[in-house]
Image 1 (cartoon, one colour):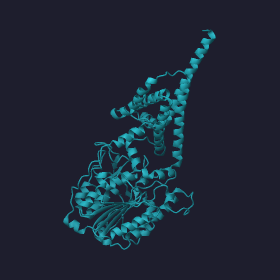
Image 2 (cartoon, one colour):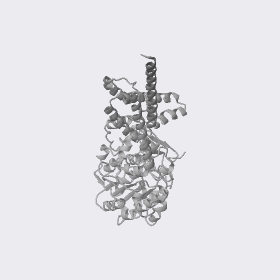
Image 3 (cartoon, helix red, strand yellow):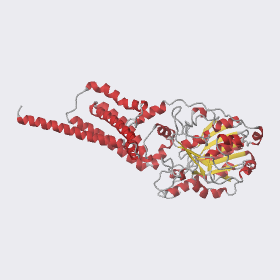
Image 4 (cartoon, one colour):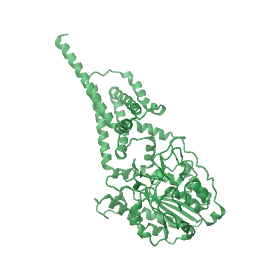
Length: 532
């Protein structure tokens, strides 16, 4: 071989390794972009908190997953690579999309919550168009970097031809997901975790049966119980706008206003689960399992009430984590999802129920004023570019302007007890996530709480405070109206509405455990939720 030929060979080899180096840098950039929330929360935040060991564990585990993905990207045949890139892209998009809006990485409880809230996907897409488009752009960029890395690596001529390595590579690609579930390592990287977490949710144990009520109505209490009891749970109605806009419409309607009340969550699904299940606020902790409580349905049936659920937000499968054992306790489920006048139609349906014979307990989920607010009033009512606060006020006025008049028209108020509240409040500051934020503010919990009661019960609350209440008190108060011993109920759950709550309790997205013995996201204390 001539000297010139030897130099060209060396130059070609050096050029090949140069392509490999550039390809590795492209891959690292793509992987880091795809996993920026995993890297931020599991590595950088832990380092900032002084937990270097956990940060190192997270970084090493992410590095292992990156190395396996790199090997697969560079060595697998083109069709296999295309399939892996498509699967990775779907998972990365969900991760970055969720993180871009919420600012946190995805986990199993969050995915379960997202599935429960799937009905709001269209609303979320409209409300968070800008961050979701940014997430799409970031996903495309990450995939382009991964694809570019493969192109340069293959061009280098330095990759071995390992056709027999395909089975081993495919097996190794699964190893991190198994390790994540069997060993104390984290986090699962963004290109794969959607499928691992979906597996966790799909294979979770069947929900346990609901416990039967341990209490029974007293004969004296049952004799005073109203024939019809209704819980009206609105959607996204904040206390202050409600008081300002709807309050004046109720001045001539006898009712009790319990003032600013704390919701038990700043997201819909956990708020409804906690309301329906009842919460022992004095002992609530991470080990609480609201899937096992008797629930309001069990108590209502034990007191001789027929049970009815009206849902103005969805059709088909029940929402808000209404699991089969709880669903079995509801005798009738009516879907009344419709247009902007859905809540008026529900008011008419409840009005007819309140005039019927027999004893009924009804739980009505209203359409309310969930974002996008402009979808809840006729087009052209206000300018399309009106500020968010005005859009919200217009939506609330349209939703509730005639609701209570239609609900109570011609009803025998001496035999009817109605509670009105909302699942959570709203943060209406410009640019803020209205509710369900990772670090919620108090406005996300501030909801109205009204009661329309027979005089024999209303007099009981004449001296009740107008602050310090929580939605956790609705269930014990209702059980008292049904005829259960109020002292026993208060000891088991929370104070009656004659007093402030015994303890503020609120839940995050992980309101129910994925597996037996799992922990839930619960917070408790003497301060109003969202305040220091």
